Length: 151
Image (cartoon, rainbow, N blue to C red; front, side, top):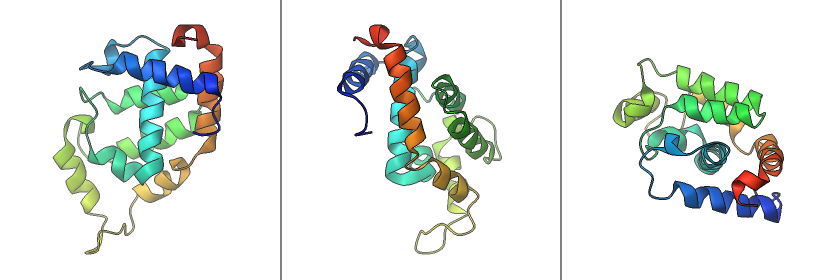
């Protein structure tokens, strides 16, 4: 994220300020919602992979499809597809609503030390974690929508 321009950092700060205190991220209009979703998801993924993303609930428990759509909206189609694949691994509907079920399912792919073993999430995490293309696409998206993002 440090490769982003000062304008983009300001736009992200603006978007995040609009999201503060909202119960539902879907209340935000685009492009603010897109910036908030991609920034939040990619930041979490970069810090701890899909495990971190799925271990916690986002405010209002938005469906993961909103995140996938946001990635697609910025043009990060490959990352969107990987995230979509990861969500599809959960063998129950609406995984965004069931943190305990998500964690129990992901725990099936850990050894006693808590390390991932034969996890279907790992290849997807590897494709998403540290993905600089996502940040480059977000930068372009922000620049294209700078006026609507407080710039």
